[in-house]
Length: 135
Image 1 (tube, helix red, strand yellow):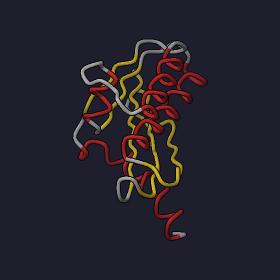
Image 2: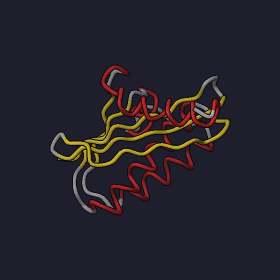
Image 3: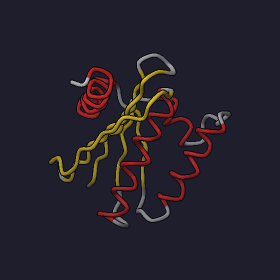
């Protein structure tokens, strides 16, 4: 089983934003990545993390099934169709997600509390601190 933990964050909303993801296979971390976006919203950063993670999955794991964990209830509710997407920028990102999903196996989205998403959150903060403070 592949587990994917995604996170995005902005300091201010909008504000300086970054994304991060962690991929685990059989409970072992096999890939971590993060990046700085610039000025964006939390939701945009969250979806950017998802696009980056799913793109990596498609390139490296093809049709395998994965569980994706996000601490954004909004994103999970939008992806499940529970909430409508009114923001055009987010709607475009969701279309990108749906295209990437076509090259993957079954993807199941799960909402988790922030405490269970610490590894991806750590990567977001690394990217933010590096680009804001040079640290």
